[in-house]
Length: 294
Length: 125
Image (tube, rainbow over all chains, first blue to last red; front, side, top):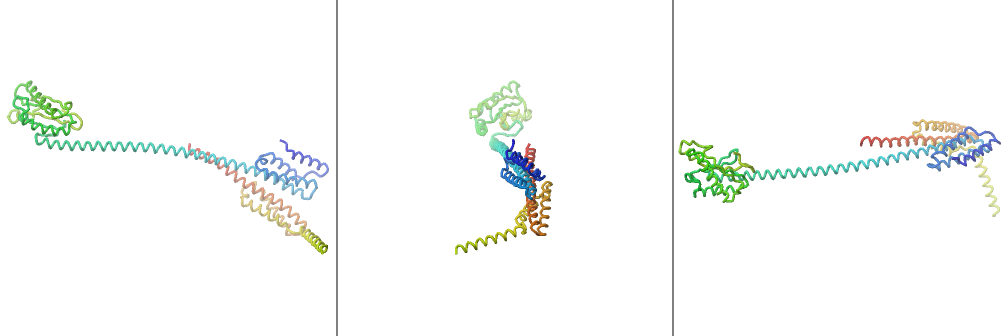
């Protein structure tokens, strides 16, 4: 790129040099400084400052052409004006770099802020979900505790009710309600006596309070007679009790009847009292929601 | 009356021009004194003394300003003219020193702004 003004200046300089003295070092430096400034970013970035430098150089050139006494001083100032234009152009470039960098940083910070905000939202959502789940679990646990407490309360009430009509024990296999065989059945019979029906009626009413529980009805005899007979008799007696309970509304699929014969005696079979105690029917109410433990 | 007034005006103007012309050569160049002082002060405030390139031009400005003040103190038309020229040079040097000092600050600020991006990117990597 050739600057026509520079060419004209150079030609003018040569023309004047031909008819006058050589230009001063200051003027040479000023021309050089202006040439450098005008070919750099100053022309685009600080054109007004470059124009001032041009005017200053023209003044110096005129002074040289007229052989003015202050030609060296004016050239000195012209060089400084050109240098000033260059420096101001650099300042503008630096400012541009700074502004661009600050904008980039602001943009990156904004993007980071948005990302952090989104992550926070996700974390909040996850936390809310976890809290909701925990609340559900607590509610379920509370309900389970309430159900268990209610079940215990009902069981204790039932236990008190049974105690009026039968012997009640709490064993690992569950609550054991023992009804004396002599009260329930006539000798060698498996038909419930009228008194037995009354007692069983009360027991059945109490059992209906907890009819979700599994029941084992077990019949026992004393040691007199043959074992096979005793097993068969005890089975029929257990069945009779089971049928009575089912007829009173207890779910049949939750009751199992079992004849155990003369096994598992609870008293001495050598005495009449002991044998009377061994002739019995036991109703085992399973603990909790499970089946009875035999 | 019109001729008399016109004569007075021409006389007055001529006398004023003569007085003004006589004073112009021996009067201190107060405008350039103020201008160069402002440039030098501005360069000092911009911290030119701490920026090597700017410090050079500030020094030149100070030297020429001091020399000019010496010539003004000596008095005389030639000294005043020489002082005026020196002050013109001092102003140009002072202005350049200001720009160079400011440019140094702009350069540092630009570099810092770019460094801030790298620092932020490292911190958030």
